[in-house]
Amino acid sequence: MKYNIFHLSHTDLDGYGCQFVVKNYFENRKFYNSNYGREIDERYAQILEDIKTIDAKFNVILITDLNLTSEQAKNFEEKIASNKNVKLMLFDHHQSGQETAERNSWYLLDTKRSATKITYDFFSSLYGKNDNLSRLVNIIDAVDIWRSSDKDFELGKVCLGMIANAKELNRIMFDEANTQFMFSLLNQSCDFFDKKDAHIALEDNIHVMKKNFFKIDKNNTLNNLVSNYNVELLKQMKNKMTILYKDHKGILTFNIGNASIIGNDFLVKNDDYDFFMDVTSRKTVSFRANGKVDVSKIASELANGGGHPNASGGALTNFKDSFSYDIIKNQIIELIKMKVGNL
Image 1 (cartoon, helix red, strand yellow):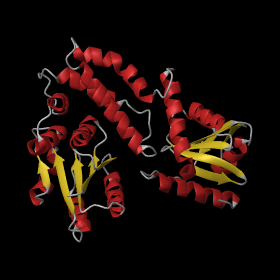
Image 2 (cartoon, helix red, strand yellow):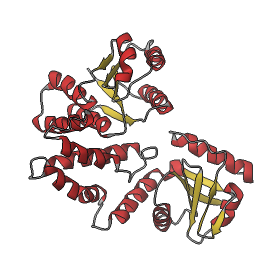
Image 3 (tube, helix red, strand yellow):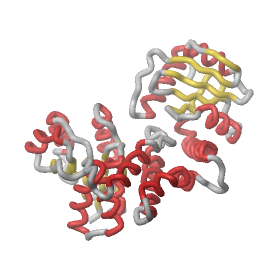
Image 4 (cartoon, helix red, strand yellow):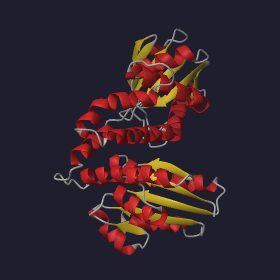
């Protein structure tokens, strides 16, 4: 039977660990990640929209390492009730989900195992065990349940920090690339598990592991490699991310990080663009140019800001943070229309 797994998981080591397990067992899968709060609902809505575009006889919505409120669970169930080709499953270990789990048969809760281990135990019982994968699962389980006396605890702590500090890609704009980045780190970390003082060896090599992922051709500093990688992603997505200010063409990013370096590199490599604009969840905005337009004037007009002709900034007081790039872009388009009357 042709089917697909739409997998929503948390944004920490345990959350990505669940998805790493699923990746190793299934080919037809699409990954989504969320923190708690309204992002869970937005991601679920995104999954339902994506299911409409997929030709499959059976679809599984798998949620891991995220506990739902009773209201959310009821709402999620109602939204797929009319579609017999969609099944909902949830694997979690947070005690706060106890009441919801008791009311829903599709909600598997076990507070004694990490979500990664629950996911692995479930699918390995169906499709067979994997010794290498099991090793990683046990390491994640040791730190997520916080068994400090476990032999894998220190390794788990390093893995925990490795994922928590892997912020080189913005997951709102580049969700697929960000997931692949997390998978690459987890996969590379397996090479150190049997080394002497494995936790130290792994920590010593995280910088190199990151560079291994971002290196496209020749070696460079991590900052430059990350910038080149981001610019390549922006190049691939620039049609979707293009905005217009009067007769000038720009690209809009969200929480890109290192806006000066990435913005300049993008404009140098894409000379058909006049400016680079990055909005942040803190309502600040940065503008960069390469001599084709005075961005201090744009900053003044759109964000009560200013600065230099090629580097300026400001604040968007009415900007509302979102987990959807399209919603963010639409806000900026409406702002430009309001200020200068063009798209």
